[in-house]
Every structure is written in structure tokens, then in C-alpha cells.
Length: 116
Image 1: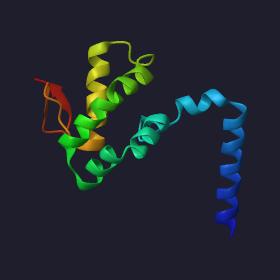
Image 2: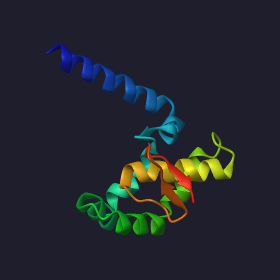
Image 3: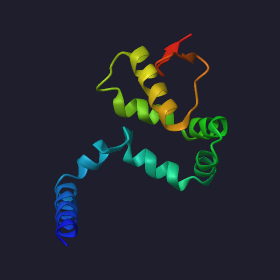
């Protein structure tokens, strides 16, 4: 019972915070991906299906068509102003979420993408 009360209380506090700070939702992420992008991904049947069947190439192509990479870059650009570092960070993030290794990158022994 106490667990449910704590969950209800934290959800309520979070809801109040978002209602009082409407710009806060723009900064929320799920696994480092902005919530607005996660929502658009979940609403796209092609992207969703490719993800759940494990077709990383099809998923990557669909995310490109949706402009996801650029949207994530726009989100992180204020924090990572160096475009090369930003590109690598975004590709690593997408690799970890989708399994796709971009054509300009290779995977090292530690699972980190590095430029070819």
C-alpha cells in the first residue's frame, strides 16, 4: 500500500511540476532521447515495426526520413557545440538504441563508435 501511495504522490508532484513549468517537457528525455522524439517514433508504424522486429537498417532509414537525427542534434547542440563531437554522440546514442552503425563509423572493442 505504501508503495502505491509513494508512486501516486511522485506522479502527482511530477504532474504539478510540468503544469507549472511547460518548458520543462521540452527538456525531458527517456534513455537520453527527447520525449517528443520518442512519442513521434511510437506514433510511426514503420519505425515501430522495424524496431520491434530488429531490422536496424530499415529503422535507421525510417528515422532519417523522419529527421530524427537532426532533431536530436538540435536538442543537444546547446550542450555539445562541437559539431564533430555532437555527431559522434548522436550516432553512439542511436547505435545503443537501434544497433545501427553509421557508415562513417566503426565499432571498437569497448562498444564505442569511432570515425573511420
